Image (tube, rainbow, N blue to C red; front, top):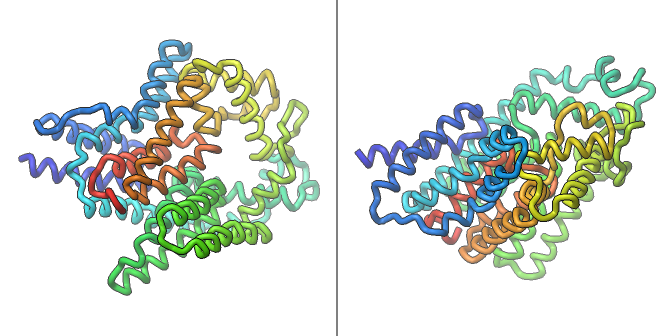
Length: 431
């Protein structure tokens, strides 16, 4: 009976690894069943002991839970913690069952994820092809009006590019129910896995399929304009080569220099990524205000306002924070009373920085706890030569600068599922 249940637990693990193509509801049900099986195996194995090591990956989540005691908006705080519960579940269950996963099985889990990402991209690419004329037509009268203009003659070429890019990205998000930032992070990890293992494929057909997959992933990462995941990918690849490869110092330097050079060349041509960077270059550190019309709002100056309020709330609550339940209320108050731009009334803007999120929620202790959590994973990945875990923590730490990855299912499931799988299992001590 235990053997059948063990196989079911492993099957559920593989199903969860396909989360990019699963709905949020299915993910939740599978994760609940998976956790029940995992806890059952632990309780029926007398050799297993729950040690303090498990606290290393769940400590930041526990700090957030403590802040509920001084949060005014308990409903929001509990709701947010429920969204982030993978922070607790995946480290705990993978720790309790760390001896079940061999190196081969972990590879199966990772390749299941990779195939699901490829399937998701293939589906979106077909959807784009079917709707090509609509997606790439000239901007419509409704788009002109919604962006605060009266006629197309008033719109600059740069603004036109921004509107068309936003149209394309919104279509992708609607079709996949996943923001392009999370897709970018999934794609970058998939690219790393394929690049790391392509030379190990013995059959030419597998090498050919891997090469085609790499091309598809690169093209899609470029098209969806996932800037931070792309930047994280380039930086992390450079660091991985420097730390883990056996290349000569000269070759390492050449590779290190070629990556920013390639990125710079990319910015010289008209493309979704260069359009975004031009937007930041033109706006600088400007912050929207009450006098801004709809035509003057864009992702860069709106984000600048968010970071301004992050700093203001941290400065006013530096030691214990405002509590996880009140973080959005405090930010909204700042947007309304210290900036006043109407763009912040259209929807809630979170802190757009995972480090700021922990500081605002739990104060200096929350921020330090999160940093210690990250540094611990870095150290273990280097000590055990766990290249995959190093890539995950490094690339995610960079994306944390601009996104609250751990507040959404797409981010928290991806991050903690693979971090916990690689951190606690002995099957990949040197990979």
